[in-house]
Structures are given as C-alpha cells and as structure tokens.
Length: 372
Image 1 (cartoon, rainbow, N blue to C red):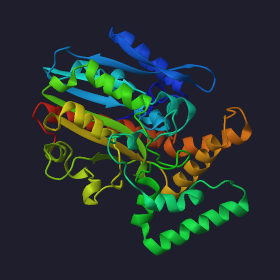
Image 2: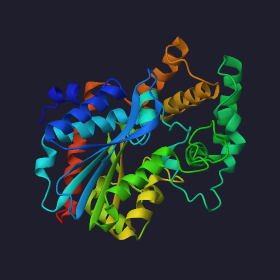
Image 3: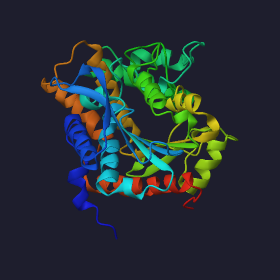
Image 4: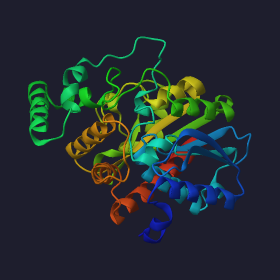
C-alpha cells in the first residue's frame, strides 16, 4: 500500500499565493527558469497574479507532456497539488528520452486567487475556445432560465420561486436537457453560469502565447493533462476525452488510458458535451494528428450542491465590487471552495494517487508504451 499522508501538506495549499510560492520554489530547486506571464488583476489582498510556466527536459525534445492547473480557477487547488507532487517526487528525472514536460501553473490565476470558477472577465475559460469570427453557439434553454439560474435575490421567497421554475423545466424536459441548458455553455448572459464571452480572454490569449513560445506545433507529440474537479463520484479521477469519434486523438486516449476513459460525445462520461472547450484552441494551434488531450476530472459532491454554490457566487459578483472580508462573501466563497476542493485527507490522497497513475500512462503512451 502506498502511504501518501506525508505528501499532503507539501502539495495542497491554503491559497493561491502559497501554491504559487511553492511552485516557484521547486522550480528554483531544479534550477529551471520560470516564465511568468503577469495577469493585469491582483488578488483579493492585493497580491500579484500570473500564469507561471516551467520546462523540464531537453529544449528540443520532440515529445512534450503538458500539465495544466486552474483552467477553472478555484479548481487549481487540486491541479497545483498534482503538479507539486510530480516535482517533489523527481518526476523530471524520470522523463523518457526525447521527452520534455511543460508545467503550466494557474492558467487562470484570477479565478484561483479569488475562489472563482471564471476568469477576471467573468468567463468560463472552458467555454471560451470558440471561433469568435463565426456565429456563436446558441443555448436557447439557458436564455429561458437565466433569471432563475441567477435570480435577482437569494432571499427565501424569490429563491424558492426560481428553484420551482428550474424544477418544472427539469421535470418537463428531463435531466439531460436540463444539464445541457445550465452547463453546456452560453454566450448571452455575462453574469450567468458557464458564460463563454464575446472575445478571447486573457487566459486564452496566454495559452496561445505559451503554445507559440514553446514552439509546440513543431513537436512530434504533445499530450495535455488538464486538471479539473466537481464531476463524478467523490475522489474518482476520470480521464475525459474530448476528441471526436474517429479522430486519432480518440484512438490514442483509448490506448493510453483504457477502460476508465470517459467520452462525453458517446455518453460514457460524468461530463456532458460542452461548447467552446480550450482543447479546441490547442487542437487548432498544435495540429490534430500530433495532439492528445484529456481533462482529468476529480469528483467531489452531488451536482445540486455545486449548482447552488455557483449560482450564489455568480449572484454575489453581479452585485458589483466584492468585499473579500465581508461575512456574507466569506460564507458564499467558502461554500464554493468546499465543493470544488474537499480538503479532506482521503480525497487528497485519491487525487495524488490517480494523478501519478495518469502521468505514467501519458508518458508511456507518448513513447509508444501504453500502460494497458
């Protein structure tokens, strides 16, 4: 039995600043220069924000594994811990020949620091990967339910009326359509849930810069593991494949990750198909034939609890500037944090164990030795 208990305090951080400091410290220990891309915002207590990247292995390696944390801000507590765990346990020394690792710490640092799922623009980064030169996806059901999803007040009576409207829709149209309405992505309500924006966000533009700066389009193979939380059974880490059926990326995901792989497009995942994934950006800039992508999703609690926490947190930010120290802010933010980051020992242990397994499978797949 692998005992992970001693690793937990060194990997899981209490806030963004501590997580970032640990990442920068470990990179310095390895003698690796960090490229920091400063975010124009500041944290809730005025601290600097940045997406930090570090390259481990030969600069000219033709194979690259990419580990990304905090696509959905507050979910960065999990992803950062997995990245730190890989560094603490000598991951760079075990890279195969002609293989490098690019670690992207906090691609959405604003959301990480402010305990938001969104970016500073109020955008869900994983709905922002659309072609903004083309007509945007339409989510008519969201528009119908928008005022109930984020009501004008969370007092008892208006909240009960909003909940009743959502329940009627769910009863009439079924769970799948209801979930797609709420979570599939929408481009009409900036204060709403899962808003994809009207232009590339800072985090998307930063992702594009990272891809270009590291010349990833010329590599033989680029494999991305993007850490997420919130969907699925508690503590279970599901590798989710967003590649379309018939694409080479789908075949690689199946070979590398085996029967635990989830495929939303085939209905075999805790996730439903969504609009505007950041995978689209990577696919476009790197090239489909050399690119493999999974979202490693760790389950937390029942979806209804997460939806309630998200609705109230979006309502909070819709009211204007947020007082970080106000008791109501702390209560709302803590509920969101608890859902996306269960800071319990058993959950943390499952994250690290599964992350190590997925990284090993990814590296084996890259060099032609699938772990199945």
